[in-house]
Image (cartoon, rainbow, N blue to C red; front, side):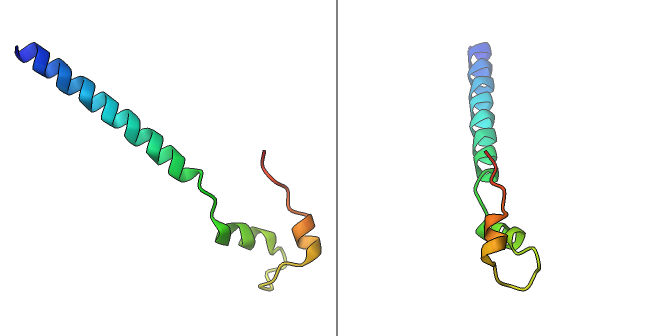
Length: 60
């Protein structure tokens, strides 16, 4: 009986950790608009010109 309980507890912990890891990875993928705009503003004047906007390379 103790072996079944221990096995169940270990499997439950493994599934919990796997789901937690997936959620943590998904949060890293969310885009940050402030950082995106900061990266686009190459001359750091607080605005994004058409040339700055056109020069941005997108990740694929």
